[in-house]
Image (tube, rainbow, N blue to C red; front, side, top):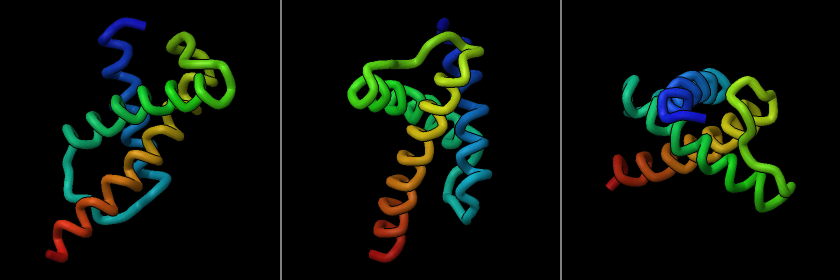
Length: 88
């Protein structure tokens, strides 16, 4: 998958992750995209480590599910870190 495909996948999956985990997040469109891109990479790493399969083609369902799971994990970590920083 090319770099443009990763960016599109990250933007879409980042937005989906915010829809699945609604809440007040201190971040806009760019932060959402970055969380989605890094979350897709994280999901691919987790999929390869646990199931022996990584990210496939752009239109493969496995790619989107792994990217969404990685983005949800990363969004959860992001929320914990930003809440701690806001309290101190």
